[in-house]
Length: 151
Image 1 (cartoon, rainbow, N blue to C red):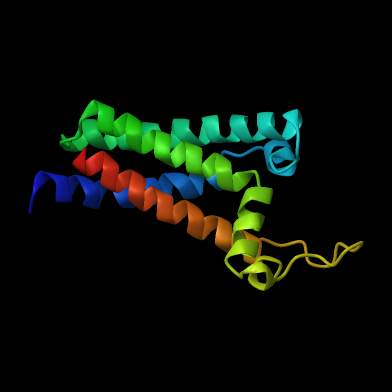
Image 2: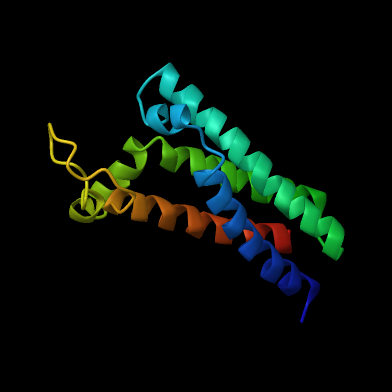
């Protein structure tokens, strides 16, 4: 197996674990409640979330790089983290991912499980919007891992 393949095989699951921890444990209630708002407050909340998120993913990958002596080019490390951070910010602004769902014919899935207008009758993580958000992040984590491994 090539060094790039080994690096990819290590970095992808590391990013997936780091993502899950950072996106759920590392995100503050303030960030989660405001990151999708239009305007400065939403942009700032999302940027703060993505900064702490990226600190976690970068730390995890850097630790594995060091401990396992992975063959990672420093520029590739930075590119992988930038791809992860930028695509995470884009999706977490919420209206962007909602627009993509509309454009691709996934609006019905996107709103699946969301509380009905004027009611708080389904407060849960089990919504179509959440599933699409996580699928988006996982796609770009795969790309980030690949770029980290091959650049």
